[in-house]
Length: 404
Image 1 (cartoon, rainbow, N blue to C red):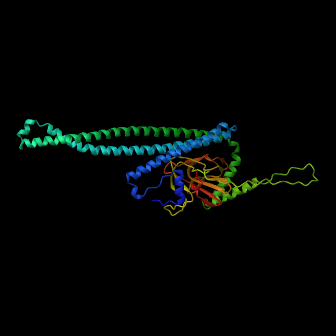
Image 2: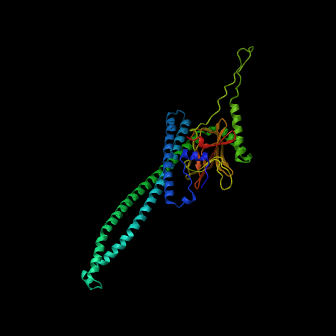
Image 3: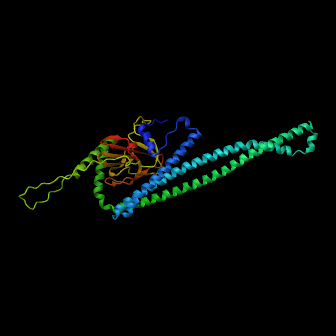
């Protein structure tokens, strides 16, 4: 059994992740069924949360007058609805698994009850084929025949009770098959809805790229600089430290006073008031969210099979799962990084930085300003693992404490 740290246990309680099963429970039908029920409840909760999150950006998109802002908000709303559809599929698969398991159990019970009835029925049929006169010609006496008749009379109520139980099992079996059909239909509908929402988001992203071509030159310069930092950094921690320093310098430059206006009276001394220093950004509990829908498979501080201690949370995502920004911020790095797949590093300000790794495609670029829930990429196609790390001033932060 995986050894979860106390913060991770809290994280599981917050996000509804399912706990790993012990080795002894791998073949325990009750433990498997309980895990599937927990997965169903978790997926339904994730779907409801994602759909609720889509309401705010959708309303903001309707009220936006700027076309770029409208596209940005609509993309965030669609990303939330995509995650809702992904959670619906997870729920549908768990529901189908539960119903199928119940169906197999009922079929096994029905077969167990049918077997003795079939044997008894065959014996009675063989006995009924013998004419009453032939019984008198067989060895034995009328007493044996009377005894056999008494046995049959005593068996009939038992047969009736057994057949009534079989009829109940058959009715439950038909109900389970109907439920299985309904669950499969709902699962197919969720998959169709997911494909439609992904197509809509792709169209929005393409439209946004066409509208932002005039900003490509400055964004490319910043992307090239970030790429250079990535090549120089010895590991991903050093890259994040370099980007954090870059962000701090950028913030200091933004606070510098602009050019001093020429005074009307040159004889008078010119004074310039420095702009107020903004308060340091603070990510509070409930602001942060997990970037992808799925099941938590590793938490902060857990040691993997290679002996490496995790600095964040790893989530098993659906193939092609939608990945979103866990909190508002500015993209300081977006691209492939050795050993981590495609990654996105988001500067939230105030020394807070998020790293999201394991993606196969990106929809955010260096310099993009993101709202929480804005689409940033997609998970891989097979056995995808998305890892998110949160750091402040170069130190890992327990994400479980930041989740709503």
